[in-house]
Image 1 (cartoon, rainbow, N blue to C red):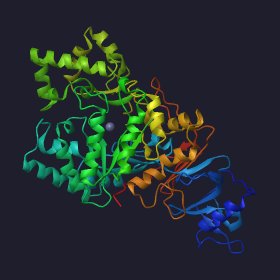
Image 2 (image 1 turned 30 degrees about the vertical axis):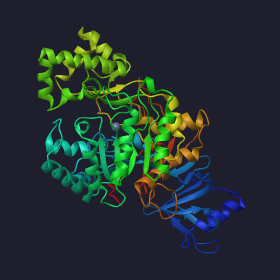
Image 3 (image 1 turned 45 degrees about the vertical axis):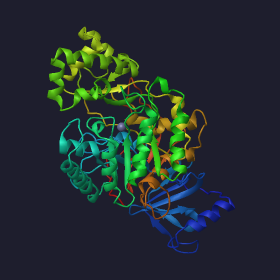
Image 4 (image 1 turned 180 degrees about the vertical axis):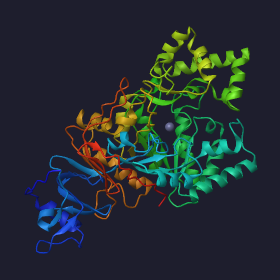
Length: 536
Ligand SMILES: [Zn+2]
């Protein structure tokens, strides 16, 4: 690391701001030098609040940001002084809805995320979070993780644990058992309750069931409701986008939780150009005091599983064996076929369904291709494939860039990857895992100047810290934890594409996680510096 001494000229205003921000422990001009562990000098410092950047030096010691100001005039020094001139120095980014695989050896280093500047990921989303929160957090502590991790307890997970995949209301005893699991997860440090009301078995739950369980989570101060809501606009015989958003807002309002709509956007060609509608729902709810937020990623494709996209809910009830039994009954199979045809039409056809499953027979092929290879109609190929279990797929072109752009302008919109770490042997995966954050910056700041960098950085950091009520992260301020990113705005770019997704983003020069170097000079260090975070 080269050391560069340089004189910086700060305006009177900036000096005044820095002087008032400086901690009194830092030496003044005539005192002895204060030595810090790392000193980033001369960068454009974004504090994560949405304020314009200032040119300043940032000192780190013992995992904390200990200095923001003019190091030379205050005698702050470091044996590890890093030139940040021309670079952006920002708080570490928070992936507000993630599927990072921190629990497996192949994913625990979180490198695709670190190369975007992400230092905290939020997991247990879409209703899928275990209620064994303490065990999972402990395993992260034991095995090490590359970013910090936050967990929700998941409604779908606990419903399945208590009543399998039955398509019915719970008995009072089952509901009591679910309440107990929500309480267990919250007691063990979950940040809130997540639902996946689009997915089996969450889709079998009534709004009232969810409100009831959410009220238990709401007994915990600051608890969150994270929802993959019931119908983002492309659900076969669904409730429709509008009713689905209204349901999510009602759950927040009646439970007293603070809500976040996951990957908030409108699905299906019939919803292209309707971003205003999505924005208005949240703005109207907020203006009457409902604490509702959202997060999004900037891609037009979703990723989920073949069964959810092509098989009606009623045919999945009871589990895999019952599904196969329905395929084996000619009359039922025919009903499923006609539903599958309708579902594929809503989703844009079989050539918009792309397999991202590790299965090498399928990975990277569209459903249309696989159907041709097998000389079957798409609905027939779906049934053949699902006989041996569910498969991961993307749905291409389900979102509209214009909607994403419209929603990106809202002050309550956080940023997420929604991305799952691929298995090592899986070539094709969703590029969002590798590029969501720089792609958002590229689309809305570098390419069309729609948003300011400070606004987008806030959506990556301070905004999410406010939502998750992280007391000492998400902002670049003295006393805060040193989750920190130094990036080169001339190079910060996503490289992952749908054709070649497994490419790390470029332009992130340094990343600190809890004050430890996780990326240095553009190279991941392999440090497992993340911490399991529990609800404050
Ligand atoms: Zn989701």
